[in-house]
Length: 592
Image (cartoon, one colour):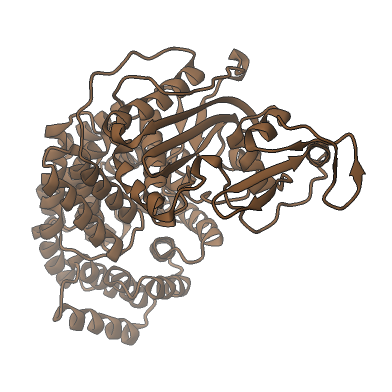
């Protein structure tokens, strides 16, 4: 450590102060690790200075400034951090060219095996200050920061975040917040206690992924959420030439130590993993990155990337699971792919993934969803429950089981499962999912309250506006329903599914001319491409034309449209329930 009397940056001599010449010295002085100190600089204005030279950047700090900052932080008088992002400084990257940094793209193989490998690492620090009285029962993995100096490599740090979440989600008796809910904190300046409170967790994991030329560094740390107390940290360095070994060594090493810190037990060593070529895993990670954009172009890109991974390695199970998820999303009404086109691809991809790796919880949840929509109810339930057994924190599996229970008419059990999914992923399984379940349960006022709350938080959520239109229809508040559905149509690029419910609302409100005008739009659209039969079915139910409603119900049944799984509970079908033809559809859908 360099120690010398200095003059402070404002020109006030202070013989008591020392100048600390590197991150390690600053971290040592503050009694924390380097990752924490760098986070403090970025988020909380820790006073660190920089000198930039032709080939490297130096950091330094004055002890009197650090003491002042620390005292203000403890007293709560610390002013907000600057809005400008600091540039990560590290001698590890010193002297390396941008070209060398970009070459780090080969390291994509780093993340491949989550539950396998031999636990070793070059350097790891561990502190176990957690006590039995403060056991961690809920955890969130914050987005790992990309310290590679190349924003185009975000898919790598995001992929490691998702990998770590997936690994930790397999731990029973630990609630792990899902990816969607934590990714909104990417790049945030919120204090960790505030994030912990918002996510309702006991602890947070944060860290970074950094690579340059032929070297890789991953740092993670476990922090108690309410006190910002550092509980454990580990740093892992390896050479790029060992990337295939590093795939499982680092991932298992991180998960192993975190699991020990959480549960106080040491898990057994997994069996030797398979290897995967870097270009295969790169395509897979890019597919995951595109999948989570949840847009039509993003889903199309995801299919392309996953297929590229499969073409390069037909035995890589996660790529098939990702492909199943992409096709499943393309089959949703807002994207409008016919079930006959998308669902067989979901089933084939999910089954292939499970043939290669029966332990893939994600693939089982996707298979269950497709089986349910194809009316194979018993098989779907088995797959949902097996997915949850394999990964108790799989929010999608809990949410899918909620839908399954709803379709069986077991609404209270469905809501309980949905609330569990919401606990695990409050961002993804949000108010529109709960509001939809309440609508199908004929609890219209509760649904309206839930959906209004969701739209207060995100006024531009088309699904929430659409379901609000359903709920207001059910409550016979037709003018309000029309307003909500017009908003949903605007937000969804006039989705055919939304327009069908808008016709329904116009019809129930007695505004027949407007209803027929929108219905004509649907027929004109149908001449040019696919329009879900459910759009016409909902429209004619609102217009009170039962005969046409049954015509379109038959077409929906022939293609096993998504709406048919809700035959038993959908409030819009109530006027048809006493008709013998409706009982026949229940029988055909294996719901009688």
